[in-house]
Amino acid sequence: MKNVILIILCCVCSSLISLKLYDNFSEAKIEEQDKENYSKLVSDKELILSKDLKRHFTSTTPTNFISAASKSLPAVTSIRTITSTSGSDSVRRQSNSTGSGVIISSDGVIVTNYHVIENYEEIIVMLDDKREYKAKVLGTDTNTDLAILKIEAENLPFILLGNSDSLKVGEWVLAIGNPFRLNSTVTAGIVSAKARNINILESRIGIESFIQTDAAVNPGNSGGALVNTNGELLGINTAILSTSGKYEGFSFAIPSNLVSKVVYDIRQYGAVQRGWLGITISNIDDQKAEALRLSEVKGILVDMVNANTAAADAGLKNADVIIGVNGVQTNTTPEFLEQIARYRPGDEVKLAFIRSSKEMSTTAILRNQLNTTDFIAVRKDKDLVDLGFELRDMDSNEKSRLAKDGVIVVTIKESSKIDKTNMDPGFIITSINNKEVSNVDELIAELDKTTGRVYLEGYYENYPGKYPYTFYK
Image 1 (cartoon, rainbow, N blue to C red):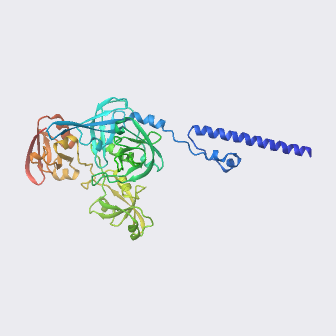
Image 2 (image 1 turned 60 degrees about the horizontal axis):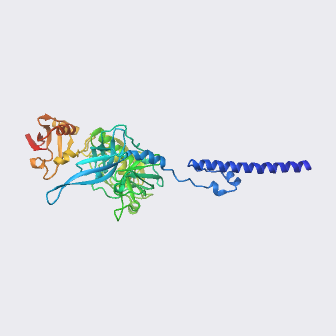
C-alpha cells in the first residue's frame, strides 16, 4: 500500500514539474517568436495546459516597416518641372511644380505621373542623396496618367516591381514621396480597396483601376512609390479624394502590373500598345442582374458589339455578361479594363461570359484602334506636340494598299507651327529635309538634328501628286 501511495505521489510531482517546464518553455518560445514578428497558432491541447490563455492569443505584433523603408527610400526621387509663362505685361516668367518619381532600373529609368511633368520645358530630378540630373522623357501614357523618364546615371538604387495582383485588402503598405517639398517622407496605411474608379482621367478611354489606401498622400506625393512590407513596388501614388485639397484618408495608386506593361511598351516600341475588343460596356446593377436572371450582381454587360471586330469574330453578342479574362474574375468595369489593358494587339485572351443564364467561354484576338493586329500607336512625343501634330506609323494594310512607306499625321493643333503650313490630318510624310522616313522614330531622329528650316514632303491618299510643307523650329 505504501509503495502504491509513493508511486502516485511521484507521478503527481513528475506531472507538475512537466507542466511547469512546458509552460515556461511555451512562454519562452512565444517571446522568441514575438521578437521575430511572428504569431503562433496553438492547438487546443496547448491551450488547456497553459495557465494564461491570453498569452497564447497575442495577436501579430505591429509590422516592422524599417526594412521596407530603408530599401525603398533611396530609389524615390523628387521631380521639379520648369515652365515658362507669359504675363499680361509680355514678360516671360518661370513657374515650378514638384512631384515624386520612382527609379526602377540602375541605369536611371524613372516612373512618375504624367500630370507631374505635363507642359514641362525642363525636368530636374533630385535623388535621395541630393544629386540633381536633367531628365528626358522616354514616353507618356495619358490613359493611365504615367510618364517614363530617363537620367544619365549608373549604379543607382532602384525598387523591384512587385505583383499588384497579390495585394489583399487590409495589407500594410507604405507611401513614399515628397509631400509639400518635404523630401523622403514615409507614411503607412493599409489597402482599403482595389479596382477603384474615381473618374479623374479626362481621356474617354482612361484606365482607372486604382489601389485605394489610407496611407497619407498629399500634394507632392504624386508619382511616388506605394510599396509592401518587402519593399516591392506595388503602385504609383496618383490621386486623393478630398473636399479640402489635402489628405482626408483616401489615396489612390496605379497598380504595378499595369505600370510594368506601360514601361515595357514605351521602352520597346516607343508608345503603349493597347489591345481592343470592339465593344461598349457597362456595370451590372441589381436591376440588370434580375432582368438577365443572373445569380449574382457582378460582371460586365456588353451593351454593343461593333461589326468586324475582335469581339464579333469571337462570337460575343449584345447582352452577354463578361465575368473573366484569362482566368481572372472581372466583377466591375475597372477590373475588366485593367485586365484588357495588360495585353497588346495580336494577343489571345480567353473570355468567360454568361449568356441566357449559362456560363460560356470564347477566345478573342485583340486588335488595335485601326482594327488590325499591328503594333500601332499615336505618338505624342513632346517635340511633336510642341510643333503641333501627332503622328503614327502605317499599319500593314496601309503599306500593302499604298505600296509606300511613310508617317501618317493624325491630328494638328490649331494655330500651331504645323497648322500654319496649311497641312491637313491624313497627310503621309515620306521625307524630311529630302531624307526618306518610313516610321515615326526616323522622323523624330531627323527633327532632333535639325535647327531652323524644316522641309516635309509627302502625299494624301486620295489626291494625286506630292505636297511640300515648310516651317521653322
